[in-house]
Length: 180
Image (tube, rainbow, N blue to C red):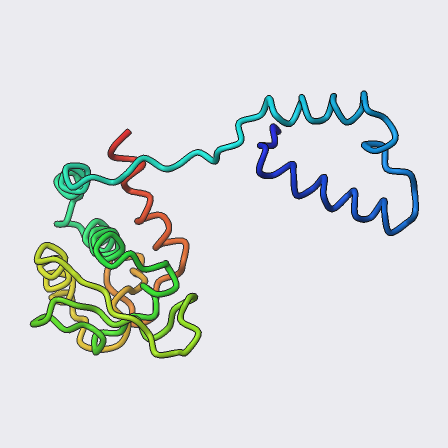
């Protein structure tokens, strides 16, 4: 396993701290050759973290075109994917959404809790007309109240219970499967 520059430097700082606390000689200060060697090796590693490829509207349209919204699992994945793209919510935020949190007229969804929301007020996210259409189609499968995202039974029916985080992660990774 190759470690990158941004992973190695904090580890070196921690090791040097514990060497100092234990009052042992610091090899980087004792040996100029050792210090130059480690600096050279670290600087050979890429220092910048790799950035994800930006999601473009064409990519989202291509993914939506490839999704099978006639099947229940494909429709649920499409609802998860489009809601996640529109609102930029984390998986935990998406799972916290109940039907009462959706305002179809104002095209927005309310997430009652958020990892970054320290005050506990929740946050709103915009949803597109495409996402609203997908949610409307999803609601025709007997969903009247409770959580938006639900588990599916073996015979492909919506359960009352909430789907799990892994289902959301799998659906959010559709961009990787369909664009590569």
